[in-house]
Length: 234
Image 1 (cartoon, rainbow, N blue to C red):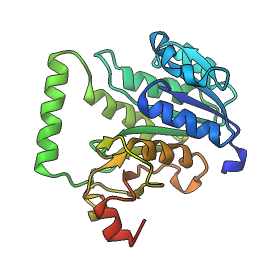
Image 2: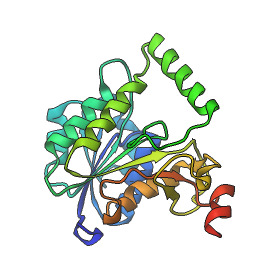
Image 3: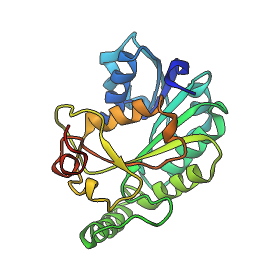
Image 4: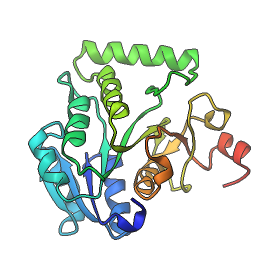
């Protein structure tokens, strides 16, 4: 499915910072947009009133997702490991179960996700991940391991998926479409920084890029030092 066939897009996790960037960019491309977010977060989408359809509810609720993705050519999903109730894996499974068989499914996660075990992480990254995982579990705030499980289910599916693995994110002006590599550890990714608006750009652009089907690109900002050094310019 090329970009000319994508008409209607569902954004799961639309009220977050990344989600709102994706909503804006999808609308700018002329897509019919459906957004899913928790009911208490609906006011965060007030700027898009009348421009999109909002389906309120937990994103790991299969019935909410079934209604939201109905008729959608693409689904952009922010995999968030909130709480200790398998939120990320439940969200991923609901999308896999209810999206159309030909729909483009784009999922977001962090660099800690590995598809084939060939990613190379620094000791500092690995230590930081272990500490974050332990602390999140102790305060029952998040299940980082559940995001790993969510992506395992996506990787095992025969759908038209892409898992976009983001570096450290920050706010900032757009630098253009991020640079990507199949594996963390590639020198082009060394800067470990992407502006959130550009992460959203990569997610939305992937809807029309069939070369990314069943790929797990690890991305970095196009204007970062490592990207400029290894791809020759912005």
